[in-house]
Image (cartoon, rainbow, N blue to C red; front, side):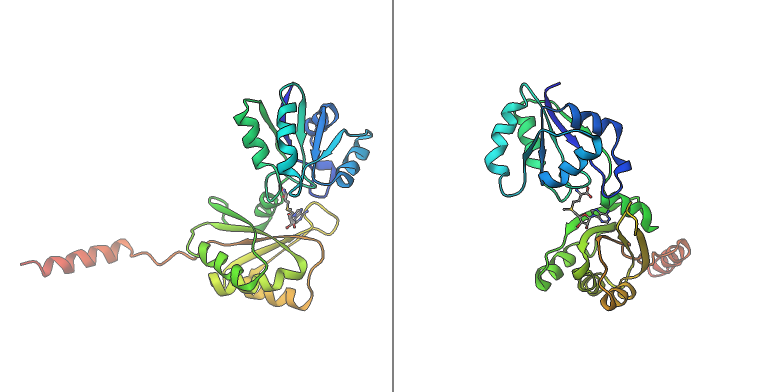
Length: 244
Ligand code: SAM
């Protein structure tokens, strides 16, 4: 059926491509891709040649109107190089404009490194905030961290190996030395998830910057000690003695 299809693809292990994702990729009239070489690999895995057109940060504004127009009569699929499109990847404006034009928008959900890391970390999952990539420059990074320092939620961010130790140190400075996890190469051969406090993890990765793809998960701020009920009763009794 015509419209826009948002298709999640594996973040490493090709076995994570869902049957529904394969079906849409093979039947779409056109597949909008970040990097045709990467998605060509996925089509090879499916034993097919994809009908691909580039859609990335540098050409998105120029090609978006044409893609949206095609959705009236054609099935347009969107994939990114890995994981879920729109999550630290292009696509949100395509969905927005597809909706504005009245086209059907369908999602084929699947792997997302942020959620996968959260499931490995052993940190609270009831409230979490995904903050994507922090700015690389120290000043801007510290400001971005200060903005989220009081939020009572587990934080999830993407980072590269060479920058990991500096980012962990900046997080320890801005948030306090919270518990955290570094999830690396999720679903791939060298998958690992290392836990510790931010400063412990910073020391570990300063020695040897890790290879591969990385997600950092940081615990929420510690509970401020709340007055117990006994304390509240005592305070009330004390206050009553001071009433005239
Ligand atoms: N849209 C993707 C998703 O749904 O996860 C994320 C795209 S973002 C441009 C790429 C970043 O995601 C990497 O730099 C890394 O931080 C993280 N990432 C992607 N695959 C990963 C994996 N297999 N293990 C750990 N982190 C991964």
